[in-house]
Length: 339
Ligand SMILES: [Zn+2]
Image: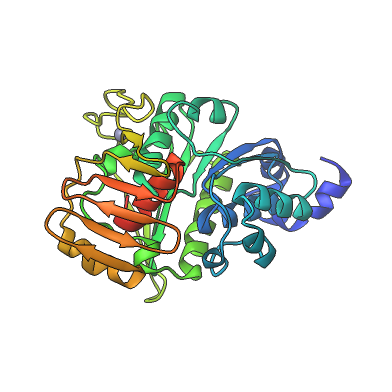
């Protein structure tokens, strides 16, 4: 390391958990952040300030005004211009630390590009808002024996769990199946910035610890309610020999078998054939009424919001009108129903 680097990172080098060797490892490391919303934008800023060598950012979304309350790195001009989050984040990050190699990708992580996107990466941080992508990251992590750090937040509640293949359970050991039925989401239930910042900060601390080579890894699940001021840490136990991912080495999400089929329908609509997820339309109506105009009968529920018209069916299918972008349609479904 150069004298300028020693100076710049001196407070981090003084920290006994890192020292010169830990700092040098951070400088050689590469990380991938999947999703640049509230969690991912905080993780990116913290890792870039810490002097990570190479950072890849993946997000296909655009900045809007509702993001500014909790998403770091973005400002009013990004919302005004509807800048792609990955590009706006990269611009700001490069101003914060010009020595870091930052690679923004304006796309979704999918089974067809996931391996390529992460092939040269040491650690993955979860900044997503849906379980489909998390199980995909988990498949990748177990298959390539590389760590990732799961994190999620809604309301004032958050959860964090580091996953290190071979040293503890994977996500599928702890949550074998994605949650079913309606789930709380930030777009329906709200979220406050202190909880996303706390979850993201804890994810970055775990990542720095793993990068710095601490081998005393024990897997804990951290949960917190930032409004109540409570924080719990429970052991995640051992890896489950019967786990379909790390036990049986079945990578259904990476193989694309679990991807919700979609089809373009009409000139400006996407149909999501999510028929393994029955919906109670009356319950959904109560949940969605604060967001827009809801019309419901026993066969369908239609929600009209400024950008989209979304029609839900009792078997879980939905048609998102107002886009031909499959990623956008998936995102709208996850925001309204949960993931
Ligand atoms: Zn497992």
